Length: 261
Image (tube, rainbow, N blue to C red; front, side, top):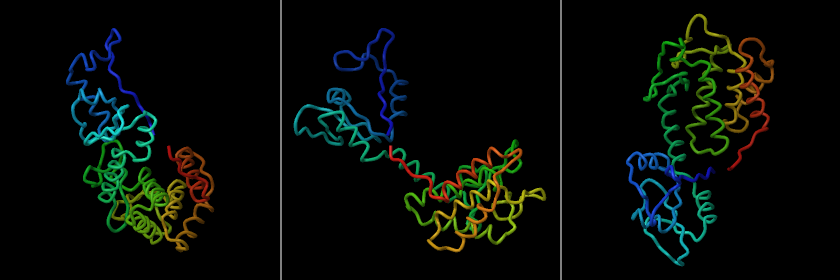
């Protein structure tokens, strides 16, 4: 967990006067709100009393030497260490909300039949065409990684069975298309006559999808063997494909772990 100290300092080194702010700038207050919304904030009791109320959309932690002090809408602690420990244990609503919104967005962006998503999507999840990327509205190089992101989250936390079901849709689609391509419209139509046959990076990401499947599912052996039988990439795309190849080898061999900070 990142712990930050937010201070406004004048040019002559002043941060406060008589227990309160010596200025009131709307831009300063707006910036503080932007930085702290959705997070825990730690205040001294006198600082809190100067504000006069809990700040909305934040977890207010107040430090005080007064025993048994109760403040409605706040948690009170006798030391900074205890307040920080509480923040670590109780989690951060900002990132929880970001996670939930990301998952909600994925549910809109993935095609309901194939499970495919586009490299670029609008805010409503529909594929987005751009002038600089001819396949931006298609399942292509960037979208290959979606199955890995979903599978990793499911393998680590198993929050939503939708994740496992979506991965199964994707792998079922590619299994039905063998020998499959790496560029498709999200509905499963081949993106163009020049669509690439399965690339190293794409094969690698499909292999990571097996992390979200039920134990002994037949696709595990099929897609893991695809990766095993694929040589390390060379040529123009060796860096990108090579990165995905290495990620997949680590993931499928169990050589990765989650670190709680």
